[in-house]
Length: 416
Image (tube, rainbow, N blue to C red; front, side, top):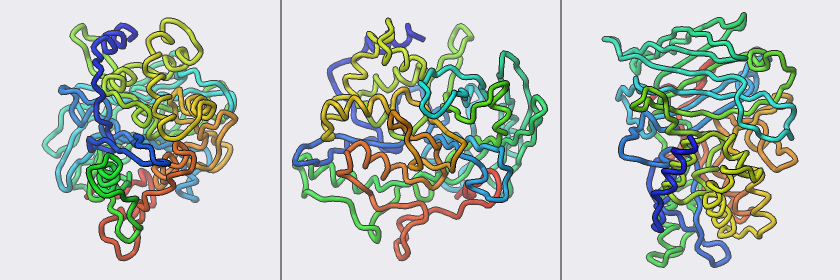
């Protein structure tokens, strides 16, 4: 893994690559106090390479207590959800790659203020077979926990089936539920207006701000994603530990020529790696390693610290350009790296519900959380507050608003 990262960094040029923002390639230049700066969010297309198709591209990770989405659900259950294959158009069947491993990694940590180690206690691996004549794919779930490996079989839900094929599986005496298939993309953001903001800040158009809610446009409206959702008991993730706090991240890996798997995607919190890093090769480098590498680099351990030096420097430059002083820049680096989604299950889920001592969100992420507004506000120190787009949309504005969430697992709206 280190060799892969060194090779990637060795190919860097001085050319800065355009930022990736929610599946559309752009540079977003925002005028903060008269200074043109850069920002982006979500992860619909970061670290692009010619050989990485959309089925290998992570878009978003969600982690929440099920009872916070459904008051009638069991109190012990958590929902973990990864979305892939951005910009999937309506009524088109898309498939999971038959050549990849899609993985949730979960680390049980002592408390919400514990240091991130990036070493998973549990890995849930999903591999997919070729589609059958009913457009279904066989799913192999491999659960790796406490050194034990258990495999179970499941099936995907094809596009034209109105009800979800929920696979109920028992592993180690615990009941898990799995869904895999197309659902509406729950992400929301006014990307189009960002192009106008960019042009004004760059001096090639009028200086404008965000549109009001009656005019704002949600770029993800009408698109689908491929979803893997798991309902998992908290007790399954705890193992022999008693902690109720977990670090979660997702990865996608593909086989190399030697038969071993190479990681090509990694995602946890929205808008972190791709929100702080401009250079596409740096994003590819971060996609190839785990949060344990970031933890080692931030702790000054070699060779990770030396390799990651240029990446951390670029992240700091981005934060300073957003108007943060040196002290706040260092605090934000410590809050958002290593990149994991921490969920303290002792309280209600929600991305803005609580920060720990380092300033990191620690209550996971719900499906309707406005992570764009939260991220813009935090990274700009409150200068930017909203893009005026929401999940439910604004009455009278047909350019935004998503389909209603479903009342039962997997909860995401039906596909378009």
